[in-house]
Image (cartoon, rainbow, N blue to C red; front, side, top):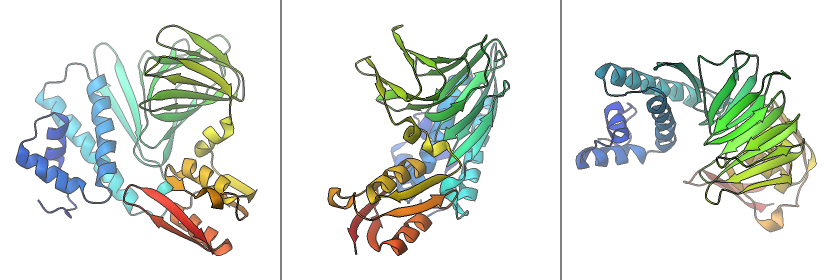
Length: 316
């Protein structure tokens, strides 16, 4: 296989998900993955696969296999379109899937790139971050408002004092009546950051805590501990806003927020963090355009690394 090929190796990808790759096929797949950008595409498709298998009940028919193959191909098309858009960092692609399960109909939204907004049947607005997946079944109603989340999302829950809204994320439940908050799940933890209202975070063991605005709760998956603390909740949820404004902000502050906004690690040496001063607003501009603007304000040297980081090394 040519490592620079543009065609999606669907059969190889699906075989790897099913654990059925031969040594020769694995070599071909690794060659394809070595091309810049393909690992991210592979990971996005893996999320769709995992979400489908988890929600599709008995998964052994050729018909189900064919439907999955088409869904993964649709992911590839979405990514291909995104790659041709200049403002790709700010554009969200949501894949909407409906699975026939027994007994419930499961609806899943997956954000492949950027961020995407989803309006639930009760009027709740959910903004999904890149790679996140949100699902709920057909029992979702005014009196049963429960959704499942994988990844990071920002919730603006429709107010209902009589019926709670529950977000289930890796066996941790976030229970609310009407509020705005951010939930971020990683391999190590689940972090809930409350912007407005009141939420209760309940761990798998049944312990929990109430949050007030400006507080966050961090659940450590390994230790099972739950820590509540005062936090910068506006920073935690800044990625979900429609704009980001800086006023006389230092290089360190700007870089921290840009890292969160674009989902990329920006490394700044300690001695440069307090240098410079920036005042500007970003909306849908790509990261390279913002760095170019910053370089015009205060000339600086930066580079992109192979592990998807941006290193700022010098200010002229």
